[in-house]
Image (cartoon, rainbow, N blue to C red; front, side, top):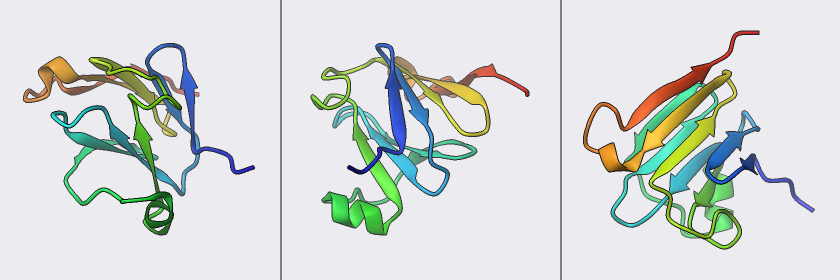
Length: 109
């Protein structure tokens, strides 16, 4: 059984856990796709992989938030923890502003 490169926690938190695999977060067709790397989050403007094999070749994992395997519903707000010990808040109601992706918590240890 293959291990996922992320963990779902609570009702709206995604924890990135494998450095060599980036996450592509898809929430809905209207919302921008996000790429979660080991050191941050950005809006992704490339082509989405069509299947798991293509995603594996790109070293990414596609996370469809509304799929039954994940949260099963559209989320207007997500929290994403990256490997650099930061938790980001993604507020889809502010997607065209500078407050769309913000650092929510930063731990130093």
